[in-house]
Image (cartoon, rainbow, N blue to C red; front, top):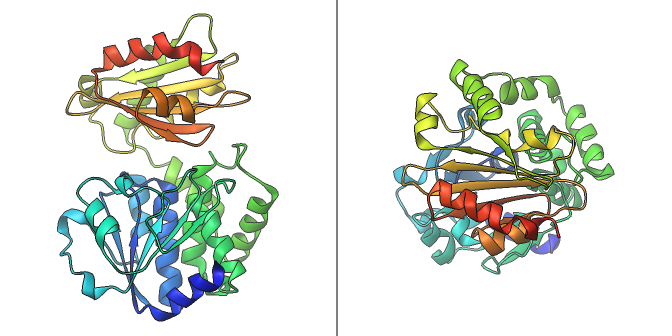
Length: 327
């Protein structure tokens, strides 16, 4: 697999890097890291984003070429390789951009850590046991003896991906290999505290007040269960001048409460539908439940979902089916 990866990489001169819709820290981190790697490796590239990330992640895009799909002039002949990072289904890039990922005939390489990948790439490097795509990217380049091309900027991006996808290194997906990789990133000049401050310590007043409101007013535990949920309507979001990223990590807060092992965050979108995030710990898994009842999926302890019902009916369904979560 690694030999085939090197062969396609060496044949390419201009690489299109793609990642999933609503890109999180791992999506941005792995994409930016690979862009810096390609520059060092003597290749041209462009990061194609379905949409922009949250504001606290945008600064990591500085210094690399990127474009949002709405502004992209499609021309397949410009590129000779596509990288598919941090997703393993074409629909994850959104319905507008999916045609490019699904239908372009240039070679494609997937590097991803989500379970159950679909086969749409020439090379699929899928390792669900790895905590993040950013770490997997480092591992692949190291195995190919190419990791010396990772400069400080690339290493910072990989650190970002690992940090955000592991809840600052506290999720069960963190392994001894993760800490080996972190050691090497620090040796490359990464200043860990700077990345933490950029992501977690640069909040607007409205964001802080929204989170305080959500925790104090919208936190509910389903009676006689270890399940808690927080929900926010469009009216509540607008009241606090919501911006993308303001609710990032809010789903994890209930898990810090003694007796809570499963947390669900529900957020109403502009169309009145509901985006859902699931988190769990211990012996409780959320990915199958999210897939079965809420059109989603993901990892055992971290999954997403979507409801076409309004937020009240979605909450009612969550409560009704909650016994399935704790079997």
